[in-house]
Image (cartoon, rainbow, N blue to C red):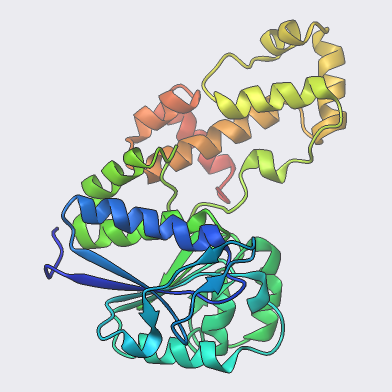
Length: 308
């Protein structure tokens, strides 16, 4: 499917305290997409037209003030810890109201969801934000339904995404919607995105959800499994690499992670397989590339763990 019109104006609304990567992640996606002829034209604007200072202290130039933006197809509201604090900035909320009025899509990255919530745009909608702030977003805007797990959520014309790098996933999803999966995949390759993540995928991977083992040896083994799920990670092989008996390794692994080596490896492989399927791989290919072997093995794992 191609873009419906030759020019697709995207407005990125920035403000003092914005997180830099929340801005530049989507910008890079749209920039590469524009180079490939999609028609995206991006305007970086601030409420009053002045340059802003990001949360890292870097000054960021803007193209114009919000009032000078004539046409908006897609609005991007990046995040920043300043948005989590009580008391929304009236000028910023006015800017969101002005830019969103005629927009086809309104999106946020990370804590940008708090700005959309303050503007009343999350009422009656599903939304997400960084897992660390999800409970607060739900408490502050009870009329919204906050999904603390998803990478990004779409409800009507409003799309919200989780922390920082998920802004890239969100922008790729927008490109896919406008110009098709092939182009979105090509952009991901150009940006060297390891694996395109879909909205339903969890914000925290198995390694990130697992307590970090205190022993270097167990940490190294966990990192090896995460880096190459399809590798040889049977208990005997892992014990040989660690220079330990299988019994000793099992004890250390359980102490460090709360799981047996086999349970941990299976969880990482299952998560990798699901991500591959959501990225467009066949079930058989996903099972093979993740180390689960066959499509029947993958289905058996998913039946045993329906939460995945």
